[in-house]
Length: 276
Image 1 (tube, rainbow, N blue to C red):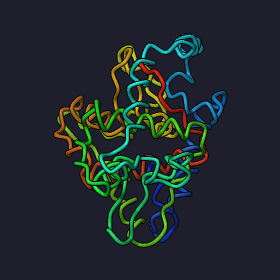
Image 2: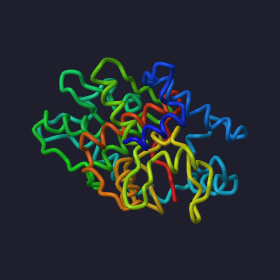
Image 3: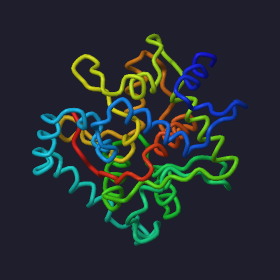
């Protein structure tokens, strides 16, 4: 914990002479200021492309792939599953404002009544249970993954608008921030090790991306039609540093997603994109 706090101090996320914790919006600005100072030629709006914002050739390849996505067949399955009525005749669109259009950028949010962070996956399962259906496993890409891909597609271009308001929300946000900056595993890495201190640096053959902009494009299709959610990516990162990951959909994972998603506020969502 001491090392994690030292990292926060070095990055400027513990503010003021009194040692008070900076607010979420100050945190977001601190991240952006860090990246723009380090990489002044990369536009903040391009952070939505992740590591591609550093590599013109890779970005050109991405643009070519997105003209004829190799995962269009999976998206058709996703849309069909999303639009299939429940046994009671209702649909997912009946559970969300505006039929689910332009709502995904508001997730995750903190539910004061439930006292916890609610992700888009949680909302999908709440819709299913309310209509007499069984909840999906959050890491099942043939069900939850596809439905979340279809729902997020309805919010393509929406600006991320995650809110942190109230004591409970701030506590969950701070817990997520602690997870992001805490070193873990045998390699003693934190999320910030790669995506703050070393953003733009190559690790083996891959360029490390900025944390700002991460949350706008998940789930993504990796290596063709392999669908991966943001929390599955967390799981993979934990394992890569030889740490034991928390369960998908757990309080720890949801809080991390809450903090991480807030950092992308104001950037447009890029639903269903390709990543290596």
